[in-house]
Length: 140
Image 1 (tube, rainbow, N blue to C red):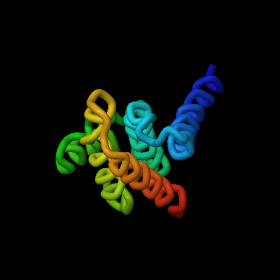
Image 2: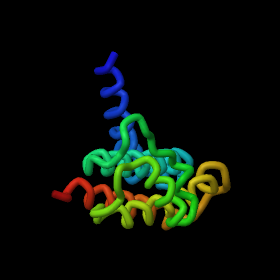
Image 3: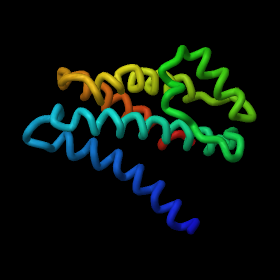
Image 4: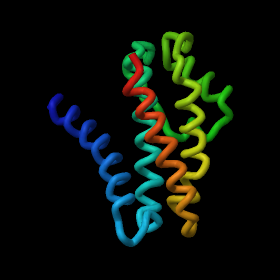
């Protein structure tokens, strides 16, 4: 059963990358993936933050990160995270991650449930997410 959970988690991460890649390659344009991108970018940044906190060994056992937190002011998110972690000091990339999460989450519902947006908005969010992901993956 444990392997299934691990595989499901890695499939989710692959799903985010797969959706980004397929949207960028689609001849119909990136906007045809708008709703899926909204959900995938939200999932992706939430998982990235959770992964970062676990990598830094500060996320308390049993706690999960909720994408809805990132619509709030940064101070409020930090307060919430401080209750779910052992410490938020020495987390050099946390500000970057919270900024990207706010950008994604503040547009998520409009992208997912609203009308078609300019593709530049989607490209900007994808780039923000991918840059944050690279920063975290390349951090020592």
